[in-house]
Image (cartoon, rainbow, N blue to C red; front, side, top):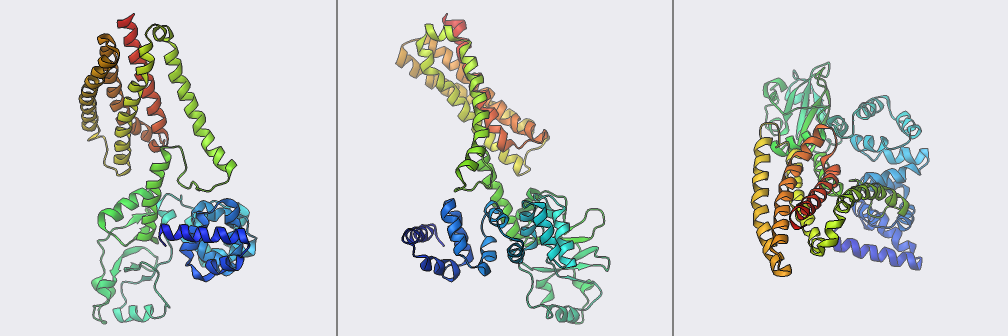
Amino acid sequence: MSEQTTLEHLQTVSESLETGATMQIRYLLNGALPAQDVARLLESSPPKERKLLWELIDHDNQGDVLQYVSEEISVQFMKSMDTERLLAVSEHFDNDDLADILQQLPETLVKEVLASMTAQNRARMESLLSYSEDSAGGLMNTDTITIRPNITIDIVFRFLRRHTELPEMTDSLLVVSRSDRFLGILPLRKLLVADTDTTVRDIMETECHIIYADQSATDVAQLFEKMDLVSAPVIDAESKKLLGRITIDDVVDVIRDEAEHSMLSMAGLDEDEDTFAPIMQTTRRRAVWLGINLITAFIASYVIGLFQNTLDKVVALAILMPIVASMGGIAGSQVLTLVIRGIALNQIGSSNAKWLLNREVIVGLINGVLWAAVIAALTVVWFGDMQIAYVIAGAIIINLLFAALTGTLLPMLLKKLGIDPALAGSVILTTVTDVVGFLSFLGLATLFLL
């Protein structure tokens, strides 16, 4: 459904709710629109309307819809369900998606869902729940088809025909020993053209890309992108036993989530931020970062206060002061964004960090000199004072150099400390460029103008 169509359906739903024409809405939600589009309608509706729409969706269709809404919204709905409804809805989820949601639910509900499963499915789910959501183990799906290496292709075909359908994204069969130790893969492209008397061992591939359960989801996404994989087996690092597999649709979710995380973290928001979250929930989340920003603003204000006498005597400084801080902030943000991206892509390490730092310092110096000259010339035209022009030119150069240093080194330092650079980097950078900008500008003015 296109964005325009989504807005049109939203308008239709809104008008129907106002007039009480619930039959038309029920028709849209329970057959006229696919589950993906119904999910987008829910995500695009304010809380009150969202609750009404959810209640109008037939119970048999709610599980299908929940697969496509954001994790935050699906958890909200599932927390309000009774045990019977929760168990029915959980049957619609893939194991890996269900595991992600169960980690957000109360422990009592999780136990009830697990108790309802067969022993085999319960063991698989408990295995998934033991891994972090951001690891390969948390990302994998246990829905796999395994075969032994000593059987013939004819037996493989007979085994496959016993299934009503193959798991989605199946591009190869996984070959394991009797103890479930991973041995290799049998690609479907080889299976379909192989002689039926040939054994699996004769045509299987042992040189294939494997993923260990404790690898990060980011590393998995980079491997899929680099090697153009459709799926890859996940194994235990110690026992080498097959645990499951990861497919490209899961990796696309990781890439999308990381992109949203980088964008929203710059503003101190969570990647699961609901556009139409309730007022108090949104207020609490934003208040934290507003408070942090207030502290940094007071630090910058304190620095300005140290030079109150200078500002009182030279009013032009107060007019020009924001220019210095703004130029440093923009220059630092450019470097910070570039370095955070490089870290996320594993492109920056100890071997090339020094070269990158040197380049950014040189770029900062060149841009500093260039724009210092431009701003100094404009200052002379505006105020007719060469001394002020020299002061602001010097401050611009100093601040752009510090912006380059901070933008390069800060994300690397935060990464070593285990702090997300995307989340904390911009707040610290803003403080540094403001403080250095004001300190250099007003300090130079105090030395040379008074």
